[in-house]
Image (cartoon, rainbow, N blue to C red; front, side, top):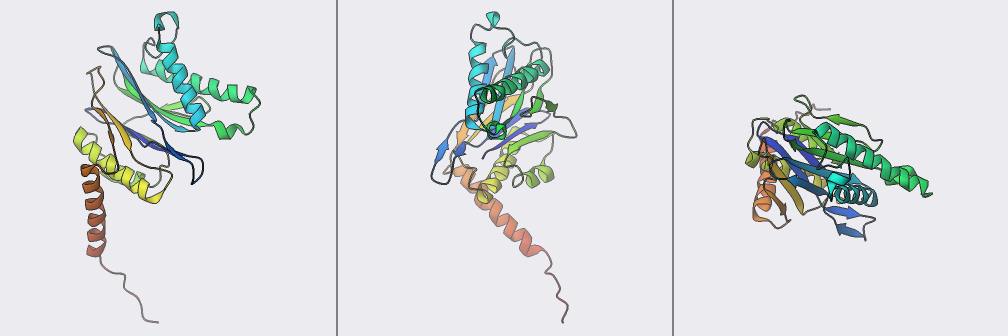
Length: 246
């Protein structure tokens, strides 16, 4: 399983993904689920992936391969004029890979499904964020839906819904996402650290701060411990339920 989040802020876009991939309790591996393409001064595009690993790796490999000598390989992520066209290209590539599995005689199409988050900015347009489904259709983030989650979404969603603020800083957004990821990690063993992140600032047209947060990272450990303590304190501060005598 996977947990990835793409979030829109006034300041820019924030991305975070876990790295755990498992095929059973005794076969757990670490794979990067975030890919960033950059043409400094012209475009920055980030892709997060969830689903069948063979499918997502094939999609990323095809997209990446086609960016090489992209002037001779249209369309490519480094050549499309808008983020909407980038989303269409990624959606078509995902549908193409899944169809190849089917044509190869693979059984159970659902086993090769994948869901993607695509975000970024191309010169001349605003930052945009898309959620791309296995069928090749997609939706775009808006003020009403300012973030997307894929993978194991339910455990980390409540904190995002309650605490998200479009005006928050990147530092505050990282804190929020780490709490969301920590809640998911503690509730589901199929999601695990390290966590990859990318912070893109609007109109910079350059990749922003990127990194990987390990399970023993001091800041992450402090956040996780303080969040747990704060929840316990908040629960203790609520009035007890009054039992009616039988």
